[in-house]
Amino acid sequence: MAEGREMTERIQLIEAELDTLYIISQVLTSAHDLNAKLQAVLEMLHKRSGMRLGMITLREIESNSMIVSVVHAKDAGKFSEPVKYNPGEGLIGAILEEGSTIVIDKLSEEPRFLGRMGLYDPELPFIGSPIYLEEGDVIGVLAAQPDSGEFLGDRARFMEMIANLIAQSVNLLRVTERKQRNLLNERDQLRQVLIKNYNFENIIGHSPPMIKVFDVIRQVAKWNTTVLIRGESGTGKEVVANAIHFNSGCASGPFLKLNCAALPDTLLESELFGHEKGAFSGAITQRKGRFELADNGTLFLDEIGEISASFQAKLLRVLQEGEFERVGGTQTIKVNVRIIAATNRNLEEEVTSGVFREDLYYRLNIMPVNMPALRDRKEDIPKLSEFLLARISVQQGGRQLDIKESAIRILMKHNWPGNVRELANRLERAAIMSQNGIIDRDVMVSTGLEDEIDMENSLKVQKSVVIDFNNESMDDREKVIAALEQSGWVQAKAARLLNMTPRQIAYRILTLGITMKQI
Image (cartoon, rainbow, N blue to C red; front, side):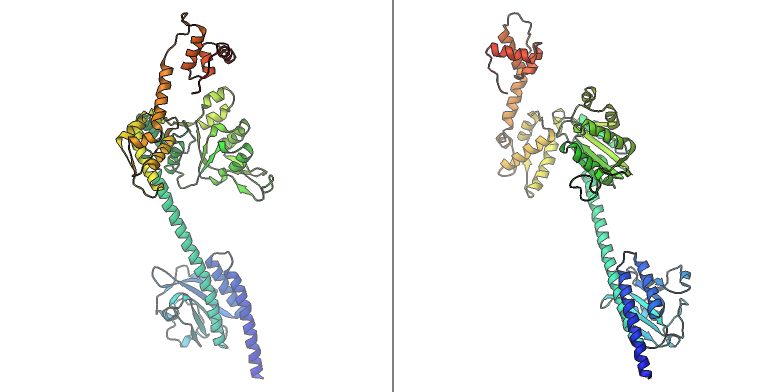
């Protein structure tokens, strides 16, 4: 009879433990923080399996001692200060040192019991199981008191199962934390590299026009104001935008870029403001725009002069108010974004002609930075060439490249209509043409640069000849040919020199039998 009752009680205990194991496994895989999950584990042990006065300690990595993390007891709130156990100190320290489960039939009869926390009932049993990732690597202890002295072996195995589940959860959390720390460290290292690469000192140029640029961007980087970088294509506007951001107060924030000339209005709006799911055909999910992604950072809008009049009004609102709605959405989103815009167009002329909104122009042109053309700072060409060749060397697998003074002299003669970008392309071509990595005059001539310089000089000579079109000794044919020569054989320009309309000069060319040249 007694054996039957004992069997029934044991079956009930096992069923309760299985039920508790299932619930605890769900708790430990939830999205809550670790302490909340461990507290819930102790609560489940108390309510569902009769394991009272639970406690979980976790090892401090720095000191190797155990610190009490969570306690389940009536007076648990009194432990405001952390309680620590060193290896070998008390029952908890013994489990930490031995790495095995300890079962005590009656706690008051155990000499290693310290009673430091005033938590446990000395008349009840005690079970403490190590929480370990692998043999010899104990990271914590799970301890509790069974409500009776029956089936202590079964209860010890149950505690070991719970300890194993806790170990897996703690290990997963620590792996995740380690990955997060590594990612944060990598992010910080990359950010430092970016800041170093885009330091003002790394922008090449010591000519008077570039010194003026440095003075302006050093000042403007201090403030969260809108910047308009102006200059011809290839003058380094994007490099300056990077330098301003990474030397500003929002350097730790995101830095996003968008070429406004690359997209039509419909796509430009979606790119900048984002869209809601179903806003248009193909919008299968919600998407954040560049303004939203650049919150508390910088947004670089290149080729700002290319946006249409209808989109200018939408852009003006977000620049003035710092708010917008996603395409297809109704919720107003507020952002704090520093705007850096760039253009190679004459916005003043476009404002006068009505192509560009005057209010948007003044909103963008708060702090202008005027980038000089390379032809206006030729003294920077030697240093720029060395810098660009170092970058080309990396692209060509670390190949040693050296440029001679004879090649520099040819570079100094060119007018560089494509500015620094053209210089970079020309040097890459020269590096490819060089067999031994030495770029001298002969290598530079082989790229065709000298022929282009000769053509430039020929055109300059033609344009420098001043013709008196009121000279009565010249007939009509001579005047038309002279005007065409002086204007580089562009009919519209020649017509202006002769005070004619393009239609009139085209008629004169036809009637006088003048053969047009292609320059």
